[in-house]
Image 1 (spheres, rainbow, N blue to C red):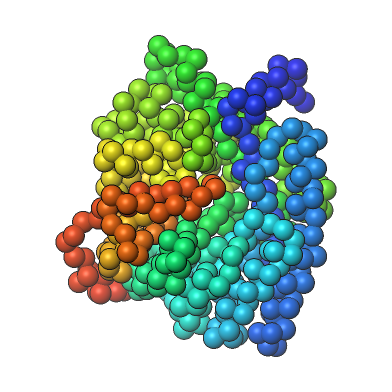
Image 2 (cartoon, one colour):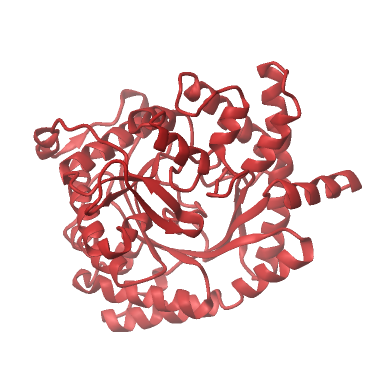
Length: 451
């Protein structure tokens, strides 16, 4: 139960500190949809999504009004589509278009799950499916795609990493008239999780139930405001304050998640308590780090501050709910965080520093724009570096990178809305092409052998 003080605190967090439910995401299993032909399967996919998600927008809007908590996005995640397309990989785009059509029919913001899991090996049908990603993202509006190329148990599939460098370049070219927007809907994972409600990486894992509700909360502004109230505290007290704040944020998310699941006749999955920023001032993870004592995010001490923030957020969330899952930490997407944008523009934040930060937070190199002339092998090498961090540290890491065709360092791409704007960041000019061409598998670390 919520007492009067908790209710008043929640109202204040909503009105003044940008607290919101970032997303209510319905996970839907599509394994029963596979038919004798691609056309039959596409129709089955459309029908089952429209049936199960028919009321998701209506219910989310009702809950937002009843509880006074903004619900920013309504989304769907589905079984990795490579599995659904396995009998007819050459027609994968047909399934992608059916998914997009269903998302538009039910009115959700995005649908995730045009995905493949190839962390240990890649079948011929999965390779064909992955090669369909650029076309699918170019000719759909709401579809998001992800590919898992590594895990702590299996190692890193470098053949898949090499392919994804090419796929990202092709996606950027196919959507260059929209500043490479397709790449903003494409993420490459190591240790992808099955219950992530956030895009672009959401998919409905094969270990999940038929229909599941996962909720992602967000409250960078709330955490920043709490820290502002204790300007002279030591770091132990600072961590405790963040924990208590994360507890309150998670309680609000659990309330919405349980009620949404009940009304939609779905299972309650998890609450993902990730601090997901927006381009709005006052809703920035970078601002939290600067309030902790940094003159500018990216300077020395940034990784330590972020590690402490991420740990305190997780501890506070776990105290508030036994259903914490997804990614749950602090996101550092450059284009979606006004503090990160400004730090990148000033040169205090570079890709190398962001890579170091990803070792201690969720999820990885996110929404980073690089010059359009950046080679596929360089992009693959960036993916490999990030996957190695995830593999060795047994955590989820990812890359969502946007080669901006026709643009170079000093310029920017602007997507508007929650996706914000991204300054073009420099990459190293030295080649890694020989390393990427070796292919094969980077073996899993010795500490993964736990059976």
